[in-house]
Length: 165
Ligand SMILES: CC(C)(COP(=O)(O)OP(=O)(O)OC[C@H]1O[C@@H](n2cnc3c(N)ncnc32)[C@H](O)[C@@H]1OP(=O)(O)O)[C@@H](O)C(=O)NCCC(=O)NCCS
Image (cartoon, protein in one colour):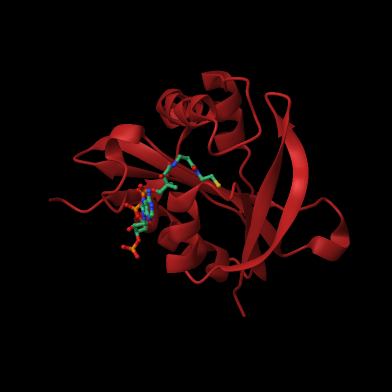
């Protein structure tokens, strides 16, 4: 099987990127967001990625099947160097190493950009995301109990982080 090829996203990828994240939104296992992302919104996000951050896509046999991005944890200056990440792989490409290729490349880029820490919040039921994070050196630092509502139900989230020192 051909390994995934990871590259920087361009605004032309926005339509596929939106379809992939919207599948994750519909699954209700990845994010508190419930509204679909538009192609325009994703194109804007890709185009506005700052040089310290990255928006990557992964291809299998020339077809984009996943994306991952870092973005600032907070606008406050004290958190400068701390990034959050998002990662989504098309459901029919799960379990083929795409997420791992994306997260590995994203951390390489974060290190090269001099970022200090990368973190994310994951639903405790999201075994794939927790396994992927652990595989790349993330540690679970705690659980926020009843942290936000999804479809009206308060849900826990697990915080994972990796220091890039
Ligand atoms: C989480 C996600 C990105 C993982 O991507 P993927 O391409 O399926 O993952 P990979 O095939 O690269 O597997 C990465 C690791 O996770 C493990 N893994 C994958 N799916 C798993 C599952 N359902 N349960 C347990 N472990 C799993 C793999 O065995 C692998 O571990 P290893 O390297 O130690 O063998 C993907 O499932 C996804 O897009 N989910 C929906 C969106 C989402 O939840 N995003 C994260 C929001 S926090």
